Image: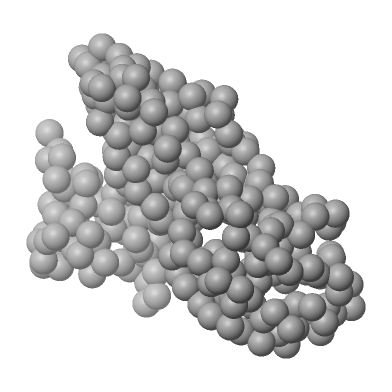
Length: 288
């Protein structure tokens, strides 16, 4: 029988494409990772072709990877059956980007209030981390701002949210000159979001790079604080704006062309969502 740890090591090496990163992920030495792969290859024959910049699976390697995924799916189904798959009991793990995370978190607390037997573990992360966490089973499901193309994932549309131009409450924006006067409050997705929205609202403008930057923060919940203080404007998703605690201090510029972002629901395709996750997803959709 193949050792589960060897299989886990093999799967991680294939996922990351690198022995060193696999060792870091698994908290093993690189020598231990190499030894696990050697044990498997002694039993099954060559599994990996070691190219200078990449690893390539042999036919035996592909067969072993399929076997490992089937074992994961069977284990998940067994755990669900043993737990009774109660929608109101057990652990629920999810990961989301910041904007939608701010919007759903109060609803998750309300869900847990109605079902105290649930333990909800909600993490925030960018789309790359969301995908990796779901694939690595650190989260049962996630929400992503980009639609991944990975056969291991089940992907469906969860919601759509508009990008918004947000200014201090007392300000009016009638043209590009007003944005120059106000200045831009930037954030990690700021240039991309502002470019997509402002290119539609003010065609022919010099570009977001030509606007004075009045500040930057990488905390989604803090982006609108300097806007509320009158220090500039920003562009961000609607859910983040709706979660801001002082709506009277800001204003959304209305009657602009709409730019919509899609939010995608992800979970592993090999097994169904638990009753807990299915119930939570429906709970959230009904409240957004």
